[in-house]
Amino acid sequence: MADRLPEALGPLLRGARARLMAAGVGDPALDARLIVEHFSGTTRTQAIANPARMIDSNAIAAIDAALRRRAGGEPVHRILGYREFYGLRLSLSPETLEPRPDTETLVEAVLPFVKATAAREGSCRILDLGTGTGAISLALLSAVPAATATGVDISAGALATAARNAGELGLGARFTTVQSDWFEKVSGRYHVIAANPPYIPSRDVGNLQDEVRDFDPRQALDGGVDGLNPYRIIAAEAARFLEAESRIAVEIGHTQRNEVTDIFKAAGYASVAALRDLGGNDRVLVFQWG
Image 1 (cartoon, rainbow, N blue to C red):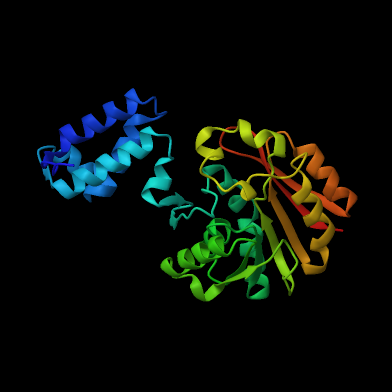
Image 2: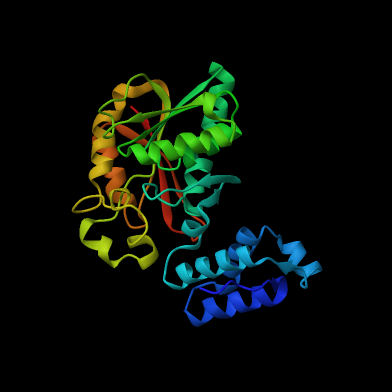
């Protein structure tokens, strides 16, 4: 391919937006801006104040390649390699689910309890099942300096990503990882068990948006025949890992509130709270033992 010529930032942004719009991308203006800023090392302020700023040919080539991937359906944050979650920049990898804003609801659901426990006990121990990027743990650790967390995942690649994120955020000393199929290799007792488990029924995974189905790892999506298998495992096995004063918080699919509540109640848990996400859908359930 011939060398790309330098191009001014303003026209570059407009051209990127037009290209993504023509490809039918959902939010072409935002995605074009994220791609151009990331690969050119510029900011939104610079684009407004100095649209004639010249972007060098290497950056133009990188932007061109990224726009091709986005137009082909790859999610923008997979292309960038990171996503913001609860104000933290988290690296992604092929083995991790891309953290979504709706999951911040889970952080908000348990944060007051984590703070209160840390204030009362001097620490709060968190177990994050299916940790992925470490999003839930790291958000809580960033907000509560006395808390510690253990991230559990069956995927070694996901755990490596979570550990890297913890290190980059300066939280590595309070975050440990365990490769385990749910509780299999877990030990100790915790004040909070948090999980955003796979909750899509197996038959529905193929009907998900292309960006989710084709780029998020299937084992982070598929919750078994009815999407409820992980909740049954957690409800059946969590009690022996819980402190006397403790909470379990789980993210759910928006139609699963009653079924998941019944699973935990049958296992001896009491419902403490049910929270909705930014779109008004049922999203997080909180339980206590006994």
